[in-house]
Length: 487
Image (cartoon, rainbow, N blue to C red):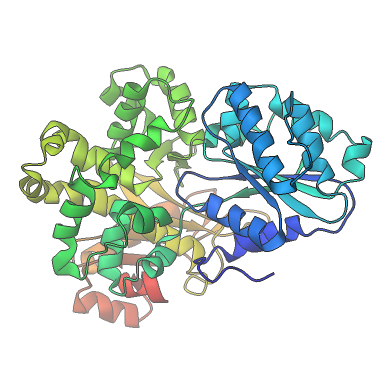
């Protein structure tokens, strides 16, 4: 089935939905589609229904009675019965949806499903009952029911544990943000430096370019500062409040002040549980729940230290949240007035480089190493994280920005590469010497085989001639912005 011409990328997601929706096998099936808001889930599902003649219904925040009435009206419009369909309960709605697939495979989409389940928590159990294995309505139907939602914590629990629908779904599709390379193409940014700057602010959410700021992209590097002011920091822009809405959209994030404080702590560079607790003013064990909720919501991720198994770092997944907490939140009262936006941005540019751009560049370098660099290091990494290496002789520790680990076929896992990342610094021989020292320290590690570990320097500002010559001799790998976006 052809993909709509106005759909950017999403080839994998479209193919999965088409396979699910057109499956000729008998028996109704169930699928779940999730992802944060503004990633294009509804666009995908509406296009699927248009191409296949399926039924698309988007729920609203409403009482159970109103939602039931609206669902009946939508089914009446789609099916055109002689008498309007006025269901008295959700079991009747699901039965009608199953009967829609009696003659052929047909996708039936319930978008914003969490709204329905919040008003009537029994709906997942009702669907479970309708999908009972020997129930005639299910076995005689080829309805392909798709439940879609943006509340990540809710959708993540829909098929887990003892949830009613666990084991019932034959599709569990997550629509994620575009990766940094796809985002550059989507924003039509050919300059890799400008592309990285834009991605460090707005990430890869498609709707931020289309619906939110109406295709306003910086024309070149000289326009970047003006773009930040007019598109992000201006109270008249839809992007101005977006970071705050990201938390408000998650129903499980009830204590918004606490969650904002946790995100601010991480944006300030406190990636460990102890540092976050000290910043927030709570005991470390009191943060287990809020950190888990933020992780389930897809707003942060936990990353295990490559060399210290008992240490976990937390990082913000959505760049806009980092930008908001590092740049906007400290000046929120002034930004609301909209009278000193230019001055606030100029004053914040150093902070932007240190707290937003630098950490984001590290994250992109790890992403490149994991997904695009298998030819550079002899094998495909199965894990790429940061790490901390003890140096007993020097009575210090060394931070490793990139540690790429290969697959272990028994014995120690191969440590494919270790790397240092610098955004605003021209890297030289001193950085290589530091990596050599770290490799020596790791050589005594029982966990990894470092006999073939490559040393890598990642820079957003270039490399000295001495380091370039060392790379020509095979002593180090050099990765610049062009490599990240084009190789």
